[in-house]
Length: 124
Length: 124
Image: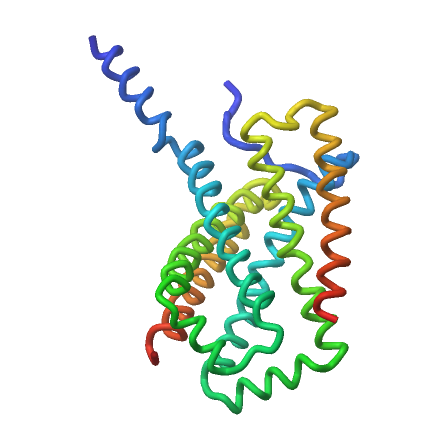
């Protein structure tokens, strides 16, 4: 009886919340968001052969751009975390060094995210 | 019983076929993108702080050397973008075989070279 319940749970967890599947899914979702965001920024520069300050300011304060920026900041945070975790896990052997690098990346991700929000939302 | 967690990889013990090169460069370019966040945020903050600062940055971008630096900084963006698309195509079982993987890797390097040159011409 108990075994059946465990297997059922396992089956469910393997769908989305199993760490490997979860990271894989997050990495792909964030990748698509960041690819779209890259195209959005590229389109701005393609359509503005000469960028004025007004156009630049208007672009970053446009609601759609702000939503995309918000999604992209979150995406970069998760995408970077999973990416570096994989790299450190594969190539860095000493456990203390690995831990220090992961903490360093974590602090930078949080710092950059808050800083971006300050730049775009504190003085608009 | 063997520990099922990912093992530490000694990079000096391998030969690198083209597929491994393309995949490794995806990791390297990704790590480099993280380094780019700091200068990008500094520029974004300054450019939105006022019109004089914006014009100062714009004047800076007129210099040929600065333009080439911008181009060089955008290369990992471009590479990570293209190699990422290959990654997701392979998730959909496209180009997953040994031959398909090699062809995909060649396609990534080829399209990267072409778009890198086009990007250089556009910036210049």
